[in-house]
Image (cartoon, rainbow, N blue to C red; front, side, top):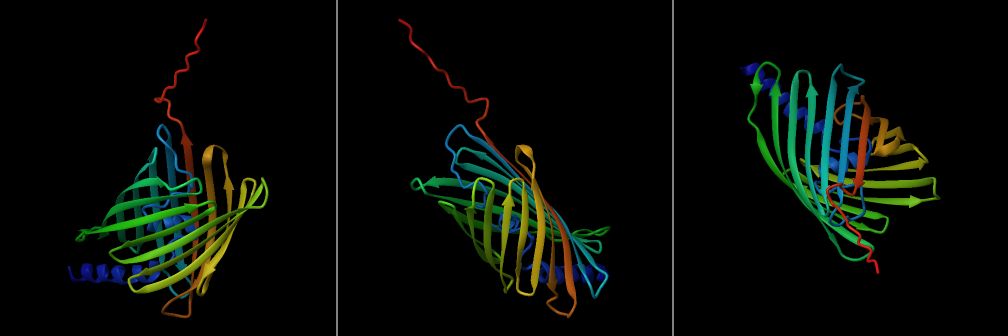
Length: 276
């Protein structure tokens, strides 16, 4: 029993040190994790529209001065019914037989101010539970998070707060022409007393994308491809300095995104042409 609690204490202390800041290389996934109001679609759709948005990410973290490897997985699905957004999310972190799992539900609502400005408010509830393989579950904890997203022309602004901290962010999309564009994102987070400011830029040319960015003592690069019917993949890697040593942390992440908005088939429209 004593060894179980010792290992539980190890993961409790270790994981915040490793993941207190930017959780994912691509910052839109980080915003999806940390803000229940986040949605990549800047448009507000009216009654009769159905949308689906799925974000998935899996990654491994390594260190040059130790033999540990941390696995992190994230999944979030949002269903849009007109101006309402319903979502479910989960995050798993595994380290040396120790695991931490978050499961959350979120609800959001869109509001139109004018032609150029709209915003979204949302709330989510999470259950957090850590467990060690072969020992059963540890005592779970619960948290609530509130978030807002404001869209103005090609800008988006984000803010969210919860039990453990707060975060803000901004995204700007700049079209060079019909085939090229830049997407720049800045993200600030204060979590368990730690503070982080990071940024990245995505250059898209037709279906290909290049990711570049970084934060204090870290930098990253990635490549992506946009498939037909709203499917996209992003493979990226980040190098950063350890907080408590002179070694380096490396990661390799694969992100998947699917987005679809359409008019559902159950909404019927009838056109009657009078005859004389």
